[in-house]
Amino acid sequence: MADRPAAGALVLCLGYRGAGFAGFAEQPGKRTVAGELRRALETVLRREVELVCAGRTDSGVHALGQFVSVPASGGELGRDGRSLVRSLVALTPDDISIRGLYRADALFSARFDASLRSYRYRIATGDARPVLAWDHAWWYRGDLDVEAMREAAACLVGEHDFKSFCKATSAEGRPTGRHVERVGVSRVEEAGEQIVAIDVTGNAFLHNMVRTMAGTLVEVGRGHRDPSWVGEVLAARDRAAAGPCAPARGLTFVWVEYPDGLLAPWA
Image (cartoon, rainbow, N blue to C red; front, side, top):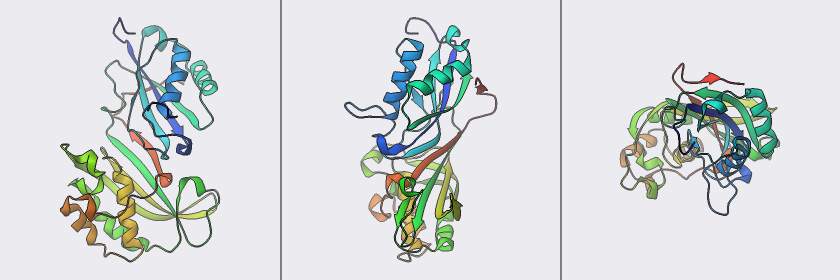
């Protein structure tokens, strides 16, 4: 591939349990999602590969619908999709799931062609330790006012400068405006356990943005802040004005939306 143009792109939809990874992006001496996936792809394709993902996740964050694109040759795109998926499943560890395989044209980018990204943050409340939700929820030992959190969340919808909600060092010299399509707060039951779910959809997200949004909304839910305070946090454009960054284990990268027609199912 290095000496000739790509004929198209191989696109994977991945799920992974984040506890065993130091995030998605490769880091020297650390176990990462990209590192495990790259090794599997290079074994199957018998060449070096370059991965582009829809959104890099931090250490401990999970995913159900992370998309990754890889430039591919015509011969590679002509392979049997089911056989390719079986090979990748065999070569990846148990905490990575190959959930879908697609073809796209040579200009496709899993990152830059994404139109919307969705996350869910899970919070288990009360004195009882969560059972099945333990590994993917924040256990908050108390109750939360979901109605107040929902009212506060409305302040975050729309086009805003989210500088208050991202890691301070990552905002230096970079644009921090983002469009958030939806922020929902609800009580849901998953596998027999009640959790508070914060669902966030937007065009793109800053470093720690969703987790800081969750930590800020919990400050409202626990009664420490009025719902209108979240609007003041936005206006401050200062990370110190917001609530804490919620634990990574509660965050799941749920899905990515792409314009119709960009991805063709392969398997």
